[in-house]
Length: 116
Image (cartoon, rainbow, N blue to C red; front, side, top):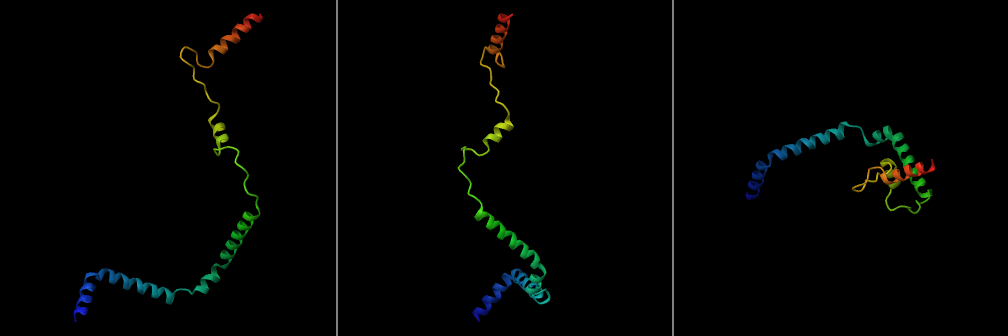
């Protein structure tokens, strides 16, 4: 009798979970009984399953026969692309100099004056 009373107490304590379990079980049984069989589902989707399996087989074959990648020439992948996107580096002028190569510009101007 003590066991029956314990079970009754636990049933009252977990009545919501028990109700949800019963409803879920009824839904699963209804789907199994009224729904299509596994063979029907496979028969409907076999073209998709077959084409997918062929595609995966081709991918595996290509992976096996393709050459392995060579040695990476640079330590950082894509460094050249980042340098191209960033453009040429701009050199900042030191204090007391003009920005953009002031000394070089002066040397070119002096050379031009001497050649005249």
